[in-house]
Image 1 (cartoon, rainbow, N blue to C red):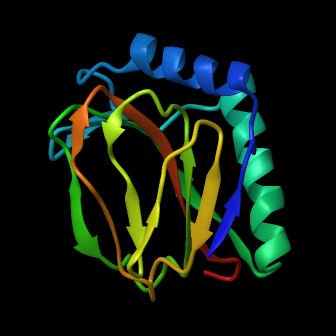
Image 2: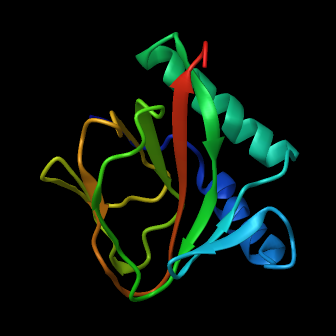
Length: 154
């Protein structure tokens, strides 16, 4: 597992949270709910293209044969969690970018290791091999950008 602090700036993370707040609408094709989270498959904008390029650069340092399959901007309300699971086998690598840390709970557990969310921190791991989960958010709202990677030839 990899952790990179300050992967993006405070301005970038704040802008991405603002983007979610102003663009989430269930009447839009790229917006959905999963459990109680609010998920946006972001359209290409200057700021989402910048994140795409940064995540592409990150994954190339891990494995040059991997590329982004997709990423989302996710709002996790108080009371939300995610049970332990592994990702699909066609997603050999996963990253999570924390956009804020002004909430309680919401720690990510990867193969028994607890990761404390820190604003702007990116974590990466083999999502199809390592079990992972999210503890319940007990106060506040958590925002993340999960990204799933695939083999370049798929």
